[in-house]
Amino acid sequence: MKYFFIGWLFCIAAPVWSSDLYHAQVVVTDTTEEHRLPALKKVLQQALTKLTGLHDIELTAKQVGDIEQWVQQFSYKSEAGEVWLQASFEHESINQLLEKLGLNIWSSSRPAFLVWIVHDHEVINETHQVNRAQALKAQAEKRGIDITFPILDLQEKRQFPIKQITSYSPKDINFLIDRYAVNVALIGIVTATDNSPDAHQQAQWILFHSDKQQEWQHTHKQLNQLLALGIDKAIDKLAPSTIQNPKNIESTPQQSDTSITPKNTLSTMLTLTVIDVPNLRIYAQIKQYLEKLPEVQAIEMKNMSSNQIVFKIESNTTLAQFTKTLAASELVKVQSQNQNHIIGQFYE
Image 1: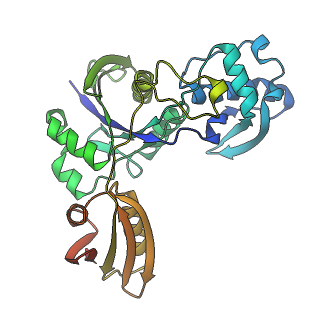
Image 2: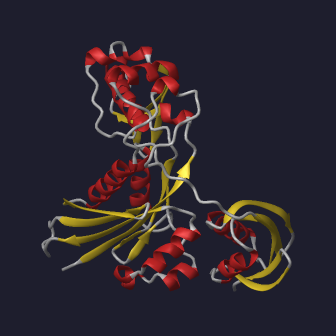
Image 3: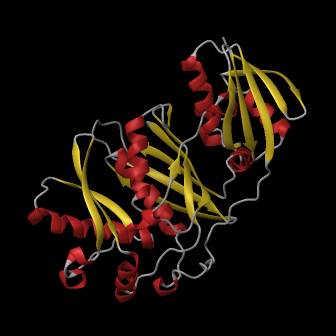
């Protein structure tokens, strides 16, 4: 039997309210007014999905009425060979509509997902299987959720070999939870039902949060759909069962029993000097690597000379732990550290 493994989705808290929750978009095949009005209804449904966290909202013509009464602004954009209709909706009117529909706004801290997916002996991130990563991000964004992907530095590659993914221990998971400052883990294992070319695939999902464990299964012929089902189900389980009423949106949000609280983190200010940097491409590569480290809260380039670069970094871990992380990178070799100053050398 052929195996595919879907690793973890770890959750951290994102900002509660955002104007983007009242903004959505859909693909259209025609930009005329005749087609725009029904398309705007679909965009409105997407916005309500973002606001409530529910993914099965259906609106009748009577409930919607004149769709343009809800629209604050709209525009068309072309992206990846498709035309999108995007629209923003007037907050107060949408809140009143939600109240009439008996729906509530997901006002507690929303989980943002770090998605660890191993598929076909490769981890999906912003470098590998980019199209699938983009599809996963788009699926989560429909529910008002942000997801990111693992950085896969040398430390993670050594500690979490793909071949041993089914034998990761709770200690392993806690390491990643601590590293990414997250609270929730979703584990999924996907297997082909048989060896035929058109075989369906089955996913076994296990959700860990608040010292609880929940399990479920999905089967689908398309892997992308299978992954989308897993993300949707996890969000369903994490969404609060009772949520703040839209009438009270301007007041302080009340946390529900199922809300997720971000972990307290350290804040360490340090300076990193990297020497023997040969060209601008490597400068950019090092900066991009540092920006993606979960240990980095903020980064600023202070100086750049002919062969070295100096960064001012705010880290959520200790100097010793950050040095250990940097030493495991495939870009920078740590030469020395003095108080809060680290000197490293670019790997040849």
